[in-house]
Image (cartoon, rainbow, N blue to C red; front, side, top):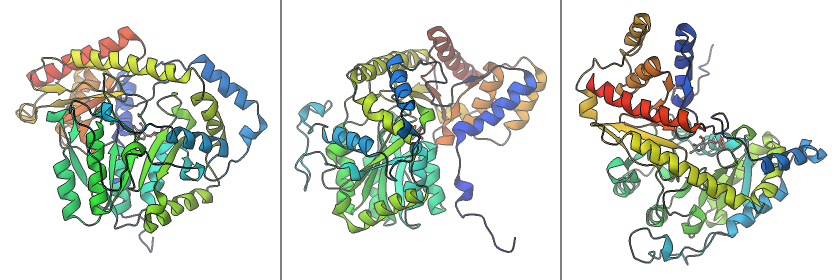
Length: 458
Ligand SMILES: Cc1ncc(COP(=O)(O)O)c(C=O)c1O
């Protein structure tokens, strides 16, 4: 090649959630070990039936010719109007959202407490949020950085790193405070690094299951306003909140700060195979550069014509159906029970902490670093000596939590994701709350807890 054709950010594209699959398949193929896939957040794949009334709506849409047509570049008008009306119906925040503080919410300058209002033109559809994330970061000016959480959902952190060509800039989520963001860390990084143009948050969070109270969201908004930043809030799991957690949508707290909320059909219908997500744009006209940036997102979508039409046309009939609120409430309750089960399975294990998730579909266990790293020889029982030897050689150079994940695979066939794959320095692993079969799921949680304990005792 006479020119280097490799993008400077090419090496930054890491997605451990699926990369671990290749390793698991190798073990499965060579040693005939059935794998329990606890790495990927697909409720349907893990046995959750799609509600019959939802399937009926999709079937009816399949029978309409226009479901086979292109939609407008931004998305089907009826879907965007529905989404905008839904966003506009979010309530003004009142004191009841103030978890534990007993204080009324602090007023922010420029914020009259009214949720941001949007029109259909402020909604932009993508082929899943994966597509949205690629464009949101891909069309940011190279030097403009977005500060995101650590641990982080790797699609977001990798996209930011790849866009800039540098390591993703992160703020700390603190396991000692139920995974709440260290707001001091956020503000110091923003103050002393003027390349930071935006802040990313995920609420509810993947991988930690944390749900941010309104006060925390307001603090993000205050920092963004003070330093002239925009906010990206990934709200994939906005309707999967449980265990008494209270939170708000970005639109309810953003005031006049420019922002993007990322939402999707994948997890709440659930319909991840639809590849359908959207961005809600708040306060687009508040800043001329933000406006131009949003225009570039639309223009880039225009080059692709549009996103897939069928799932968009199903949104209003499904989400506007009178059964939808009960559908969401039932699922939230289901995940709450599973979060309690996972928490219980890890209770009292020395050197391992699992903070009970309060939203989303995952649980994250962390190892006490000192205990984990006090021996480099840890392992789990593996029946076949050839497999044990294979794991020994493959774990020689990998991060300590990934080493555990490899041994776990060989010993139990359960595939989880090491926390080091989530832009995190904390050693641990993430698994899903998705196995639909109760007995199987409880057995998986127990096996994971037992394996973590046995590993640290080895
Ligand atoms: C936080 C978060 N954002 C975005 C996505 C991507 O979702 P989609 O299926 O819409 O691409 C996921 C998927 O797991 C996620 O966890």
